[in-house]
Image (cartoon, rainbow, N blue to C red; front, side):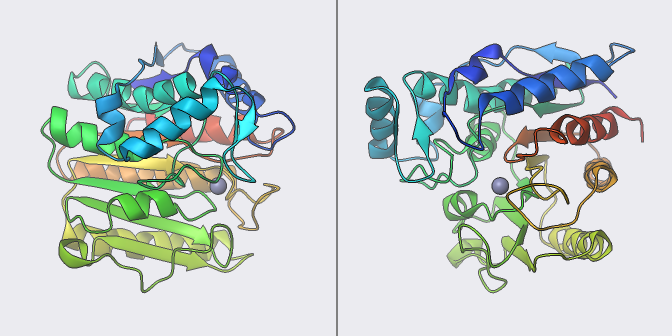
Length: 312
Ligand SMILES: [Zn+2]
């Protein structure tokens, strides 16, 4: 398998001060992945900046303008959690743009799959509101791009961040062409993601939430994951699988109380690759969301990327 890694030092220009979502996160993941790539098997690609049009497939004009103008004013906060700096707007266009670059690379058969080491993260950004460290919804922008520009019909988003991706759920709640599946600690921030939130209208049955209590064992987590995958595949045959790869569901993350170890992230990665393969393709693109244990983050990411690059 040829795996692309997308990263750019400009991702560090989204300055957040004394905040858990800080530049070092992306820097140390990129560093560790590079260090451990002894056989030089990953293809490092430069993320492009996405267009306003790409963002507006998922967010309102007001949302776009709010982020743009707030960042121009310099360091500040959009809410209690969501800190921005002067360059944050440009950096977020490159964060969503990184997902688009990865999609193009996979669709043009340059690589088989990809891991995008972006920040700011995206899954809490709703159609009309930046929140929870997130400005624009990177995976959602990617899903819409894949559909409009690369003619893919059905997309599956698997979100294993410890927090529920309320923004991603909102964006696709009425849609049956993008399936949103989230496993998350519950109750926990942002308070959404109940089992009976399953989509609405045409989208009924295309949102699947697996709320898990704090300290759920990795074994139970895996069972829930596998059962859910079966259910999802009875509803759709995704042409692309996007992962909202939050590593804050790791046992030692300071912002969550789930119990996953490095090998669980590798296992989920392999399961999603097998799923893609069973559908006749290999299109899996993983996008960094949370993960705040600076001592563990690099190693978790390496386990994830090694599983992506491994031959099935
Ligand atoms: Zn998170």
